[in-house]
Amino acid sequence: MTFRLTALTDAAPSPFTHRLTWLASASDGTPLGTAVLGLFTSPGQAHLCSLTLNVHPAERRRGIASALLSAAASAAAEDGRQAMLVQAVEGSPGDAFLTARGFDRALVLDFARLDLTAPAAAPAAVEVPISPGYRLISWLGSCPDEWLATFTVSRTAMDDTPMGDTDFGVVAWDEERVLAAAKAVADRGELLHTVAAVEEATGSIVGFTELVLPASRSGDAQHYGTGVMPTHRRRGLARAMKAETIRWARTEQPEITGLLTDTADHNVGMIAVNEALGYRTTHRSIEFRLSFHS
Image 1 (cartoon, one colour):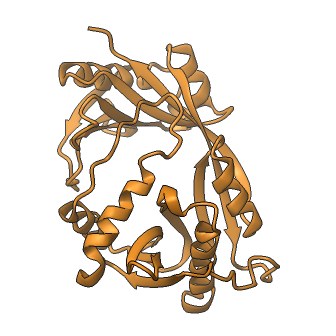
Image 2 (image 1 turned 120 degrees about the horizontal axis):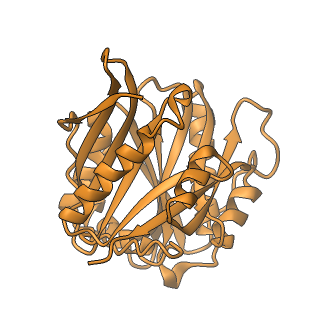
């Protein structure tokens, strides 16, 4: 089959990733597939990049995905990246494609959904009490100035998130990055809702969970990060924060029909929290890793 690859300009630049995009098209201009390569720009992640690869089902097995992958891998290696991550649903054609091309299985992700249209069933319907010595706060959009410093520090709670063999590195958060991340969500027309746990004795945020609602404010919303500072774990804070997120979505966002989350399959603590709150697994995805050797 004859097709051509065209490099495209990033239409939505990110403050944390430089993206390169290729379009595969037929001789008559019909789109056949795309590849988007994300070159991470954060300190601690300059060795890594991620790839999103899509080919129309009717056009598979014609060399299109291989050509797109080759273009992206060459660009990544030329940029000095040491490894590339690509995700595919377990058992899918993408799983077979990446396995056949020498990618390693670095991480298994459990994807789960909470159905908000079903009658609220215990324990998700019951308010989860916060542990003594803590209280919950929440906000929409950017973090309020009064909480920005301590919220930024609390982001380090994600530093030890299980990432398998991805060599994902550590994302360095400062106040500028926190505000930029919230702005990126707002610029897409989406709504960021954050619940945080505050330690009463110090007035510091020690945990947080984030939910992003689509621009339509309808359909499924997506959980982003959830983290609790190491010295405050095993006190039910993650469950209490997520329960408050569920309560808010149910009562304040009636057009939201479900909440989506994904968790490393060996992060048994967070999976247990999700299951206790009523989330049910929908599928599993594999995070594949391809190393570039100099």
